[in-house]
Image 1: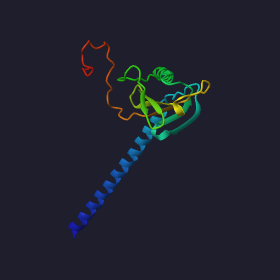
Image 2: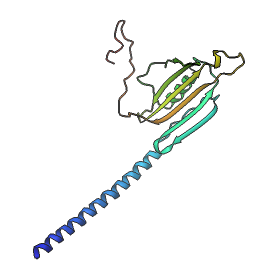
Image 3: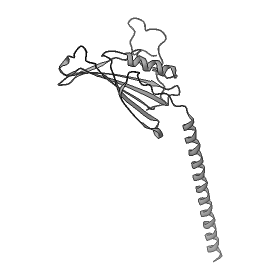
Image 4: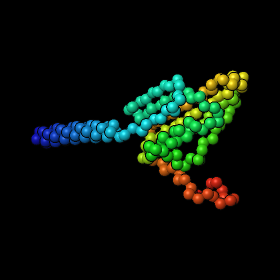
Length: 189
């Protein structure tokens, strides 16, 4: 009988210790979670630029996920890079970069049954590589392929700022010297 009580008291004491340890871990996790959330809120937000002559502006965001997007139209003819240059200047001024990307993005043209479309994609990364900005420009040929001389043509712009998809991957660095003639474009950087 003495052994039975002793086993019960040990298991009751062990149970109490396990419960106390589990509660301690829960409290610690809650405190660390709140500290992390507070630090995240204090991080300065980058400005998501909007081209000055934007029309039909729509915005959306998910603050808990650090996701913001703005979509609008601008009166700029294809193959203009004015909107790209506007974003490049603004993001560079905020310390963001396009490392590993060609100097200027190229328009990609496609044709469906009715009209020709062109798109341009560019992305910038924050200095800490935790955020990225994706810029998408879409230009579509007017119905019938022709437009009146006084008809204003609109290019669709979508800019999305979000947490970086792969923040811990180091991007290739820009080459400081041009490659020698005949050197493979896939040479080590």
